[in-house]
Image 1: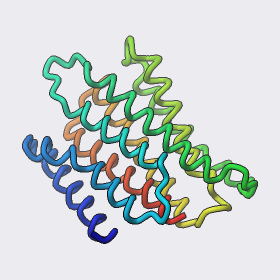
Image 2 (image 1 turned 30 degrees about the horizontal axis):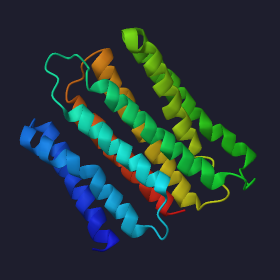
Image 3 (image 1 turned 135 degrees about the vertical axis):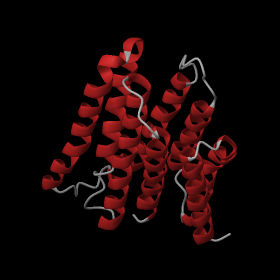
Image 4 (image 1 turned 180 degrees about the horizontal axis):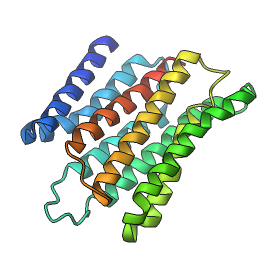
Length: 219
């Protein structure tokens, strides 16, 4: 299969999943969601000239997080939320390694680009301010996760000056919408329920994952 076909497959699965979430069609949710990250990983493997093992690890931990969060929790014990949080956190750590290691040692980062780190730091701080007071026993875990996602966002800026501008901007956009997805999901769980939250969370999450991968492929 060509990369174009695999990309179209991922987009079709993502659209089917988001539509299923919008209509609360549970069979669509449970059958499609486990296929999303494997489809993205396969696209990356075929499209990349030399696949990066850390990128595959990032996508894999995203898949593990997906599996944890799709397990029903009618009593809202958050039993599966915790391992899901750890899986996504590790996925972000691997994304940090991917983008930071690409820029490491190049010494070409434009001084003015430090300003581009601000949106990620500010968004993370704003998200924690919204969620932290409601997180209870998980407050420290949420703080740690918030720091990691903010660092992940800033890591996508670091290849500026060494990678293609289009690729860096694409990865930066992916990191930002991924952060928005995480904040939306956490706010819904800890602070206040959001109508159609899963549509917003999954659409931004899937867009974020795709843009991070696509941006790196464009480097």
